[in-house]
Length: 108
Image 1: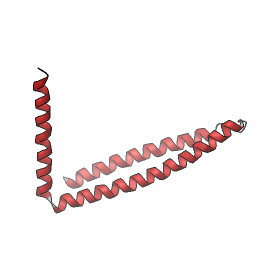
Image 2: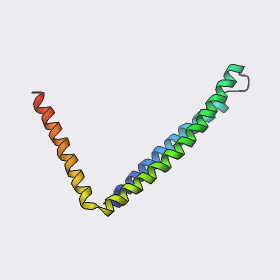
Image 3: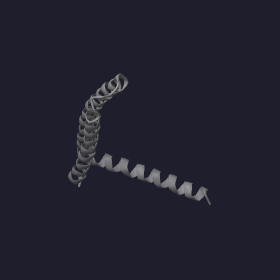
Image 4: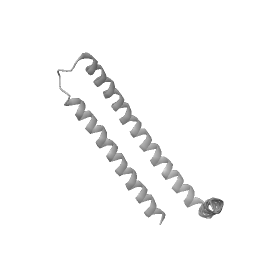
């Protein structure tokens, strides 16, 4: 089940990354198609936006790599300590259930 969950998270991360890359590509295309007859202010804005897009791509790459490393580290930790992971998950579930039931009883 752990491999299935990891694969699902990886697929979701990949689809999100692809969507962000698509948005960046659309923004670059919009900049390119804006035409050459722009004023100096528009040119400056275009260059600034290109810089931000480049920075965004670099940040996206770094965040993606960090997320993958953290997911691998979490998976490894859970595999090394399965009973502790189950205990923590059960405790979080009990706490969430308590808080929800307390909130429901207070609203009456």
